[in-house]
Image 1 (cartoon, one colour):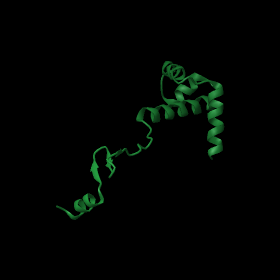
Image 2 (image 1 turned 90 degrees about the vertical axis):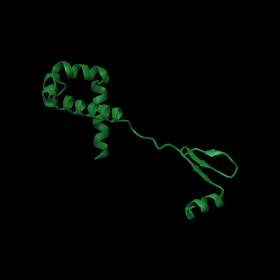
Image 3 (image 1 turned 135 degrees about the vertical axis):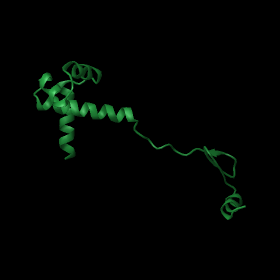
Length: 100
């Protein structure tokens, strides 16, 4: 047996795939790190891009769609999908200005 394995056995710990088995026999579960999903990151990015385009165009949706290189109907769909309103856009703009 390897020295590392012998050392672990002497310490009374056995590693398992789902955690560490301690001397008392209780399985200690490792804390999962919070991770953003790809979908949530994409949605946040979409909302940010649409909000900026709407703000730059003064909420002229046809111009905003051109800025984003998407169809007007596609932009309308995304606005409804993400529930983007002038008040949400202004609050997002204020938050991004504070980060700078």
